[in-house]
Length: 610
Picture 1: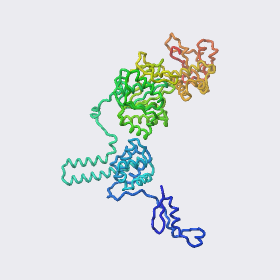
Picture 2: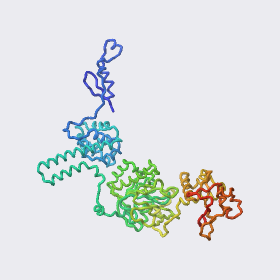
Picture 3: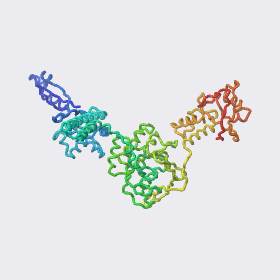
Picture 4: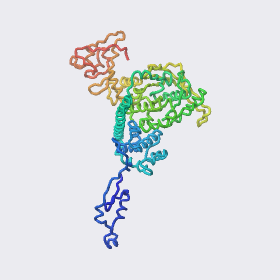
């Protein structure tokens, strides 16, 4: 904050900091001719003692009749924080409205800041001055010609924008107290003037309501009001709701963007989407990746169905970081006038770049941002997301859990895609399949003068994949196969060595998770030396016998070195059952349950083989 010099003779003269040196030099007095000829200038001692520094103060408002309670300092700090940081605007407006400010000039500034924020315009000193000037309100701020200086002083008066909520609560409290005083005076006047009791009761109720406004942020309603609310209909019949949030997840290359674009074009044009009714309305599609392919896909869709391009389909070809309050507010302000019924973010990774997908708080925050946009626009908000290598949605699952509808797309042979309902808060839809048809775009040629082609998805008679083999299960089976067939692991494998062998089909970050799952399923175990070994004894089962198999003493001896004081060698045993055993350690096999006693027979139910 700037400092200002006050010098000499008890007369305080406020000057900018940068002029301090000039001011002192101008006030210096020479003591003798020698000083003058030698160019040495020294100030008088008295002048030195008169030099003081005082901290600059914001321009004070003109004198107004005091009405308590009030806190001009909290009002100034709140407005200063809102000018400095966009996030402070969102936090302050959740607590205050323009009527809460004591000074009318502060109410005017607050309203101008909110207007800029709603228009998506950055809020700073320059834009705020111009907004007030456009409204012809700049001279109302601390008098004619003093508006810009007062706005600058508001910024300097704010100790920290991070504390804006604390400042705003002080403003709210003083506002409630001030209005309570006014309401109490009205109540007193009504009671003393002989007004009807109904008027007195109304004045009393008004006084109570003023002091409890903050609790109205969470209104309480009864069941009667709940039952009278209209039912939430579908935007696409038996697929997604007209409001709320949805998440679509699929593998890379599973045609998810093709399918979602097809649905969005049908909504914008009012065409049925594969025999499902739609509610026609404007669509905003945020294409954050692969935007260069959109033209071919839209043109192919138009050629296939012979429809004109819908004029209410709008595209944003950049990632919008909706988890950031300023980005979210700017997007809502920019598209509000379009009245969209559907807003699509494709994909989550490009619209959430600064946050960790594996973090619960981060993904919950993204889901909350989607919900806020849905509430602000009264629209359906849908995000497209990728699967991980295990075939499930990448990152934390809280996003799918918070959504109203979670949809999974799976690609099968050729260009057939199965669309399934993962979870929903309404009745789930049955899985259905679509197939991509190649459409030639005759008026678009590539660099080799060949017609450009694209895909349009249509219903197909191909069966939908209702219960596919999960990728996670397939990955674990491949890990087990390496353990069974690799000669290096005939007597077990170190985890690190096994991971290297499996590196071509499973990431290191998920390999150990698969290993833990296999151990939980008791398909493998880790011996006391840290070697991973197979624990599948299904080849000992009798395929014609459903009863448990009781192993002989010789076989049990190969599993327990304490049996009869010696250890049997499964590779050189004298019976076929023992020879069929995999290599086991010379210690007891680890078990998730209670350890078997030495005199208990080891039993295993028939599993029917591998």
